[in-house]
Image 1 (cartoon, rainbow, N blue to C red):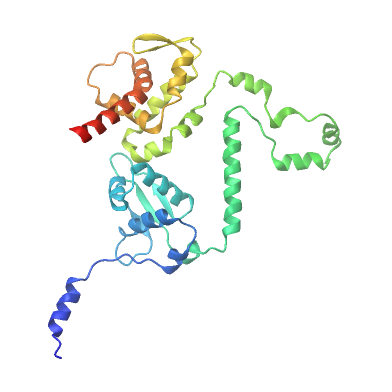
Image 2 (tube, rainbow, N blue to C red):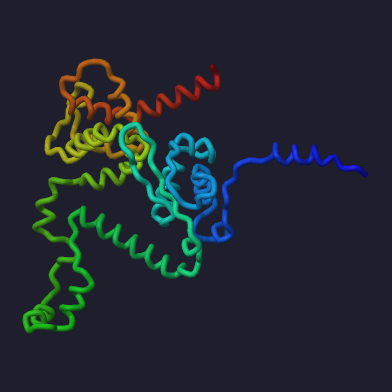
Amino acid sequence: MKVDNTKIVVAELSDHEIFTPVYHSFLHSKRLNGKEKLLYIVLKSFLNVGSREGDVYPTIETICDMVDMSKPTVINILKSLEKKGVLKINQRGLNKPNLYTLYDYKALWQNTENEANSELEKQRKEEEAINFLKTRGYKFVSKEKELESNTGQSTETSTNNQSLPKNDNTIDTKKNQEEVKERYTLNFLKESLCYNDMLLTNPSDKDMIDTFFHYLYGAVNSKKKIIRVNGEDKPREVVISVLLKLGYFDFLYAVEKYKNNTTKVNNQGAYIITLLYNAKAQNEADVTNQVQHDMYG
């Protein structure tokens, strides 16, 4: 049988495509889960041909389209990849996509440090819990100081150890009384509403987002019995209750409403609080209306 070599060569050339190298050590590694591996490979596809590491800067929208995942899911995976040390996220400023520095070397994918990593993760979670409680007025004594006092390095220390323990590791009463006015810290609000994620997806809106958090913080810690919303006086606790139920998308919905407003705003603070107060209900109503429109025309 005679073989037409010309056709074979043409077929090989036409089938040639750019590819992304994926190493076995990466595929077998337990450091990343399936979704994290998929997103990591997609990011690697933006590297120069032949490069194992480097910088890439696709938009969040492009990544979402390629992995077929929602924006919040992609953002959470990117944050997880950064925590696990396989990439670094660099914000580049107004109207520019983030720059991702990718790392890929053999030791990164080895599974020999599972126990150590587990212990580090445990310590990280413990530190996060302690930091959160500190923002709520609690005070802690470090293990080193506790050990020092127990060894009796001085007469004064030894004497103190014989008395009832001071309430330093629960609540510093005086400090707590001073902070009663601050019922909800700014850090607490930012963590609850995923502030860093907002900046990740909306870097050009940072100043406006910060302004909204400023007024939200003021409202939930207000000493006034009445807060004006929608041109009406409402009980403070009612307003605070509504504001604390805001979610990530509700907050950004209010910011977007402010950006789209074309009328003059005389009282910025009151207007922003009103937008935040109405955001959850209006956002849900808009979503419902859009779904009905898509289904029934």
